[in-house]
Image (cartoon, rainbow, N blue to C red; front, top):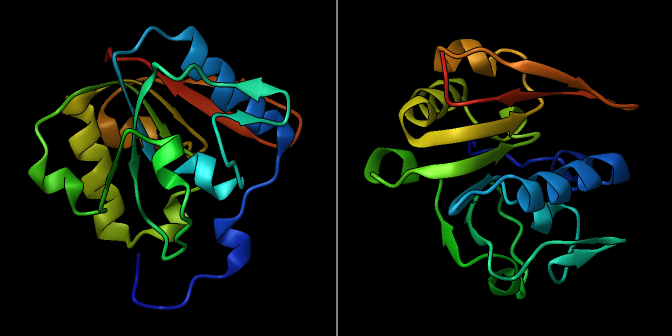
Length: 158
């Protein structure tokens, strides 16, 4: 993220259909490790892994990648591990599932490109709202239209 103040409407997310997609994909895709870029659960105001009518199993290993200055005291209830945005240059871990929802506006353009390039070698499935992500990763995407937005599911294949 750039060193400027981020507008709160760029941080807080409220679309219930998107929340359903997030919870359903985590629970349906069999991934040992999940990376949540931008810490989606925190951004929707979740105080546990149960939010609205959705529930994410406690045994799911979710790493939150912090992109916002917003701090809440219950983050440890949502994520097993929280990492800073410079994580991409340091980490050799692989993730079976990665979420990158509404993160482009929270990152500088160079770090955004670097993130997608890193993910191309470290991510299984990727769920994003950015149509350009698959091209940046050198992969194909399946479009998943919903009422308020279109999402892209990017499998680990070229």
